[in-house]
Image (cartoon, rainbow, N blue to C red; front, side):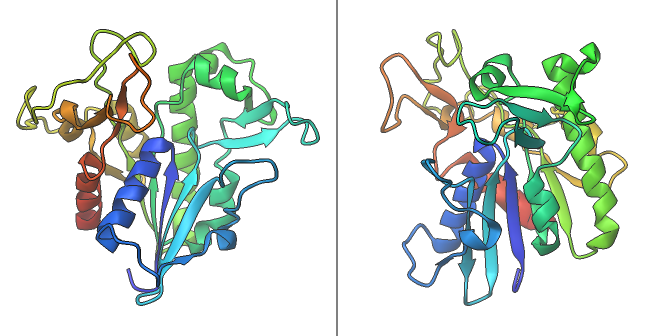
Amino acid sequence: MQNRTLAFVGDSLGRQQFQSLMCMITAGKESPDVLDVGPEFGLVIPLGGKRPNGWAYRFPSTNTTVLYYWSSTLCDLEPLNPKDPQTEYAMHLDRPPAFLRDFLHRIDVLVLNSGHHWNRGKLRANKWIMYVGGESNTNRKIADMGSAKNFTIHSTIKWLNSQLPKHPHLKAFYRSISPRHFVNGDWNTGGSCNNTTPMSIGKEVLQDESSDHGAAGAVRGTGIKLLDITALSQVRDEGHISRFSLTASPGVQDCLHWCLPGVPDTWNEILFALI
């Protein structure tokens, strides 16, 4: 990875994989020679915002850059009225994120992921409106959440595959979905994952095919490789943050994100082997 850039683009599980890799590279220690190069990639705190849309760090000893860009749905988001802070956003299902279009030429290893933001609650909360072909979507087949997700992921991977001949140095991966382990309810209805015994629900993965059929289908026949972590993560139901978060609320557990160090470290071991 000397003189190369590794980029994670995706949701908060992609962010956790980025955080895991940064901790693995630095051995979890603050290092004065790690440079914050976020501004090079437009990763700065926007006016009135709380945090940037991602982070980028460079290790000068090898000139290796590791970055994360937040794109929970892997499609382009565009404010309908940029002057209005309360504006709705066009969610262009058939356009890759602008970040990828702008910076793909600077990336050597790319890891994409998406999945858990594809629900009506997230769309309403974020004021996202589905657009296709530059106009508000009227196709009912696409409007269904599962169909919209598959349409978008196939569209972005198809675009990325079309770019590979222009960027022969690029290794591109799509990471399969990270499993949730809520029991007896969901995150907001008392669901829990209190188990602390590793692999109590299974100790090995025997299947030959991915558990994430959508991800496997999206990369089939392309130059993008599948980083398949779903089945092996499924057996680690005790590995989530659960009720042990510093900001935990009574009765609310996080059975989606992972403790670090933890399961995402294994995703990075596999990524390293694939690279």
